[in-house]
Length: 330
Image 1 (spheres, rainbow, N blue to C red):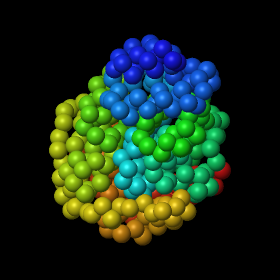
Image 2 (cartoon, rainbow, N blue to C red):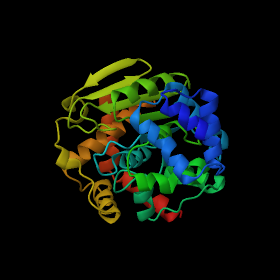
Image 3 (cartoon, one colour):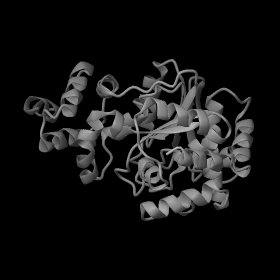
Image 4 (cartoon, rainbow, N blue to C red):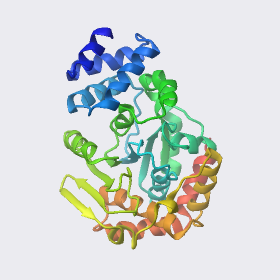
């Protein structure tokens, strides 16, 4: 590691193969915590290259516990995290709205490293038991239309750096990797990114997968459709800027989508919103993200049709039923 750090401190970059090798070694416990912390810190001080990110992703996917859900076309809705905004669990709520429409969802998530409550925090608080058993995951997707993959269970390298990330409590390149390494390899992805540089990198990487994807970035720094500002949207068909009015009828304020101060508070907020009792602003933000995900699947003629399907999922109680069914299966 010393030679690698010296090269990085001299402003050199890693090849795809070398980046892969480093992350494989991290997962095997080859380096100590101080070496890993120094390595991670480099990428807080400069932009990661596409080759480096690809290499890190190669390592995680090669080492991961694979998930097979035969017969299902699944979607993941995931943000890179690390935007520092501490919103409520918008992406995870959107997953249940989408599941309520009948679309199969395989949500990949982790504990919050820079926010109070990541996807894993809130799912655990809601009674979900993390698992890697194929049969159980398939049963959840079959009966509840959704399952949850707690990233450290499937990625040894993420488990190896969990404590370091928590202690650093700042955005690292591991935030960037999450959306790229869902072990179920979903056919559709809605990916939220925290800046335009990451949007460019993800566009390049996702174009190479051949899968349908939509990348979203709120221009005021959110890694999701926040409705607090215009949203940059990137798909295989091109790039667009959409307004809050186009996506969610009207704009909301940052305070409207605040996520609370504890995991317990985040879970209570989650249940309030999924039960259809959220504020207008909370509902609008969740529905906009769910609608964008549904449009990504190609099952709807327009964004408006997808939005109406999301509204029906929430208002009919189907989204809540998906959560209840998932809870029953634990």
